[in-house]
Length: 253
Image (tube, rainbow, N blue to C red; front, side):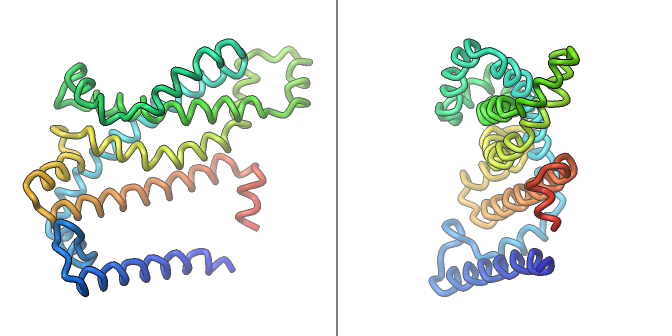
């Protein structure tokens, strides 16, 4: 059964890419509309250094924005979990951030923080990622075991000790769930905001503007690889950080 865990995804991917390849070749689809996987890989192998450097830049933007959003969300979530008034006052703001199309204000943020710098990209990634993390933190911290809360209160534990030893561990499952959702979102936001920074977004934007199908689909493929690697690393981090949790113990049984 353990071998199936690794074989099944490989089989699924092979079938998917084979069907994709056959579809493109059978219907002779134009490269700009849809490129065959074999041609995409061939193009990537022609310029591996360019795409590797660009992928590192995109990953840097996503990781920095991710980290900023998580740090803010943990402290904001702790405050919201401790105060119903603060939660009710903050929720509409987080909802507005979540539902407002970030593509509409990317230009304004880039003008305000520097059109060709990393700052606006990191800022937008952090802003867009914040609501899901904050809501997850609040729900997780509110779900902390009542008996454990009473025990910590009985020994006069400080608010920081309660946060570190009880509320934060209780919020980890929901935070990791939000992180898996935000991984793809952060990469998309970084891609769309990266013009002038040298990331994959800049390569993709120029390829689209110049009608370069091979280059565009190579960029999309590189983004998919980057997202897959990010999720794998996130799953490994979750197993390391939540080995005590029932969801992780059941995976190893």
